[in-house]
Image (cartoon, rainbow, N blue to C red; front, side, top):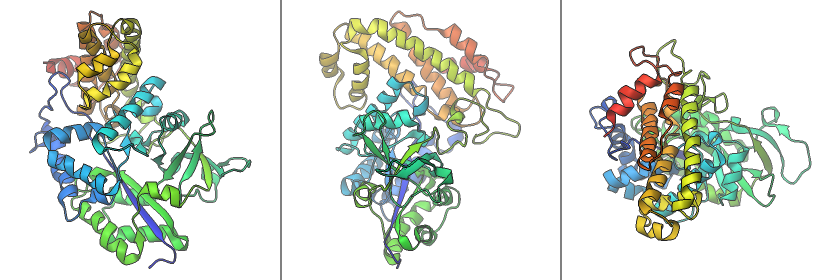
Length: 474
């Protein structure tokens, strides 16, 4: 037994990028996932199914989020797993929402940032039947503007890594801010409070996870006993909250059998040690913040802010010695070019077919998730040709998906995930062309040509567009 209660929360971020062919809506064969058809199928077999149907349903024990694109795929392809995840939340209320398209939110323009948040909330409400109180930020990527939008959209908390806290001070004080790295100890035994600079009544709780525990879960595959030992040791005699956060795929995909260890840690082992396993949202009330905080532009998987998603910062996964990621910047520049061109099209064409084009884009998620029919949506939002309106909205949907973070995360321009986001860009341009517009293909390819694969056979972005993007067009 501990001297004071320890509250252990393990958050699992369950997510897969959208893998569907933008022209057919079906996931193509992914040879690297063999013997399975694709990576979604493989990871479902190794992770999602065992976590739902193992000795315990670990979704009843974890704090968790499941990406909207993954939930949509599970609903269609493995409805029993999908239903098991939702049933776990009905029983315990432990799920939180996620920004919809897994874009790096600090790199979004304000309108796209807000749409990703609104779509993530709407998707959560549809699938879990309640309003989310927390939201997982893709890659925990954050800046002050992201937190402002979360607060303005009615979210109550998010989860961050320790290094993402820039400054702290006691709540309600006028003391100078203390740099978090210089503080004697950044409080993690309870949430920190963030306040909106423009609206004092808007606040968010920041749950800061324990970095050493998170690292151990992600890379060390600890036993159930070691997990609880680490929590008790971290809390010390004062007890309090110990939170760890990691990819949910850690439990079964990255480490076989890890779902059984975390399940045992949060049931039998925790009970034997007198460790509590509460919901995060309950702790916000039971252990309110004593300090307020500011954040730095940062993410959990990049030590250079959010540079991993636009530059050759040195952060990568996989690849060979000597490979670089200088391709990241021209890739983002090319997609930004298309995005800004598309904004002009919406502003010019939207008023003829939609009452408010950007409000309609926010509401269009209800059609995507099946909460309402397109005809019903059109009755409220469309004033012109409903087909032209839908083409415009679908082009915008693909323009949002082309910023899926995985396109920059790995090691090469020719990788599976990077080619996928380029396919979304191509599909967006096809939809604009169907509207009679002339997409900026030549300009986009001129920028993409500045990006080069580390594989000489793949060439530059222009060549990859021709051989791996357009060749797959249906």
